[in-house]
Image (cartoon, rainbow, N blue to C red; front, side):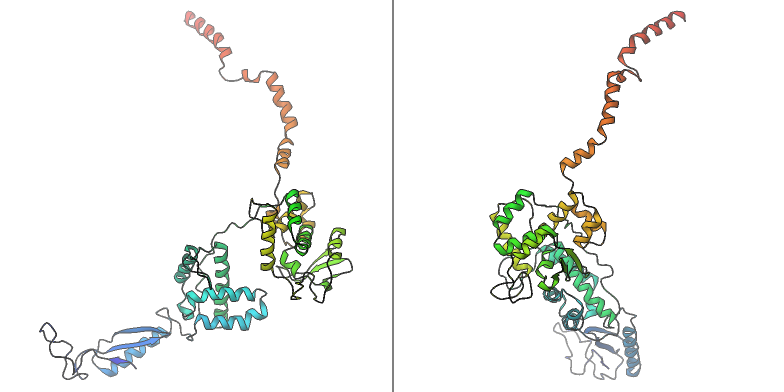
Length: 407
């Protein structure tokens, strides 16, 4: 119990201005002043008057208030005092490492989340705090890890991925009984238009391949042929290439995808020297598979050497270009979906980019019959029919004059 009175026997009798001190009480604590309770639950402090001078009654009131708070009547749940930082570590070890392929990415995101929520008890993370986190990330108030440059605003897509990780962590907290209610029920993701419409022309593809180093050129060529993601190609092993088929096991949707090997693909694979590593694309110095970040850096320099300056050309542009060319060539959606790994035509629609020539051709499809009808009506002078035209005005004037004379 934590009861106390503010009066005291040892308090000075007079205040500095000479007035008597109301907190001076010679009979304290056996006086008529009220008892106050003062306690903490889940690091939050609660204090108020019991409105009674009887200590036994004050104890009962304090116990009743504790019970009401722990029962949730004051929006505080009876939960263990576990910080977000501690639970995030449990989330990584007990769930992400076994269930998620993006565990390394989750670890990087949690470093940013810890800066905002690490010291908070789980139930102290509210929707308002999360909205503040979104605003601060977008406004560029945070400096990057181990950087000395000025802080820069974070892209909305990056903030959404951080929010997704936070949502997953808090969902596990609810599932494992560490949190009663999910604070992100009303928190919405930021609106992002990340649909890339940049595709490489035939000339740009030729210049890019000429500017790529040998190993990168083979990777880029396979990406342009198959439309596969670069990450899928980097995870490709020699054991996945057999019996005339190439199989992607590490895919975005988790479903394996099997592609027949075309002559062009076989020519690229034959040019790759097999080493001791099981991966097809291997770093000759470390004998390990290349990473997407490492390849992206080399690819960016190749794009600069190729003189491609317009648009946002990234590794994903290769996939976008390949699938767009397949669709433009007239192949049906389900054939392209079997190669790309998309599960619906709605997802495939973002790769459909009709050219200006095809748009004009579609507009001209209606032109022959419409053009003939238009020419026929023009030759017949259809503008002179209907309505009050100037050519009919003299006749009307004569008729009106005749009617006026008859009247």
